[in-house]
Image (cartoon, rainbow, N blue to C red; front, top):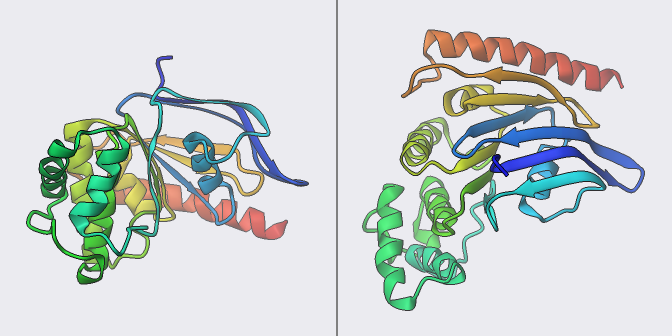
Length: 245
C-alpha cells in the first residue's frame, strides 16, 4: 500500500442517519491534509474510522501504520501524572524499555518547547502547555499517521499561533502523515498541503484545494489570505445549503 491512509467508498451510518457517503481519499506518507466542513458533516467520524474507533458501514479503510496516533480537542491528560508521566505512559504502551522512557519523554517535551516541564502537574500547566504535552504524548507513539481533531480550537489566538509553529516544525522534521480536522479556514491554509471540504450530511468530499505556498506561512500573508477567502466562500455556501435542508 503506497498511501499512509486510504479510504475507498467509506460509508458510515448510525441507524437510519447516513453520516458519511462513499468517501474516497488517499493521504500520502508525510502529507498534511486538513478537513473542513459545517458542524455535523462527519469530519470527526471520518477520523474515528481511520483510527479504528468506528467500523465503516460499507467500503474500506486502510492505514499503513499499525496504530495511528490521535490528538483530541481536549488534552485528555491524566491529572494524577506529571507532564513527563503522561508522555512516559505512551512510551510504555509503545513498548519502550523503562530505562529509556524518562530521557525520551524529556526529549519529546523539548521538541514541543516544554523543556523543564517534566515534573509539572497538569493543574500547573496553561491550556496551551497542556496541548503541547498532549502533542508530545501523541508523538511518543511513534506512528506514521497523526490524527488531530480540532486540537487548538479552544486556545486563544496567540497560543494557537505558537502551536501552529510548533506543529509545522515537528511535521517538517519528523514527517508523519497528518489528517487534521478544523473549523478554522486560515488554520487549514497555514498548515495543510491539501484542504478538503466535506459537504453537509451526508458528508462527501465536495471540493479540494492544493496549498502550494512557501513555508513558513502566516495567516495574514496576501496569498494565504486570498486562498482562505476562496475556501471560506465555498464553506459558507455549503453551510447555507445545509440550512435550506
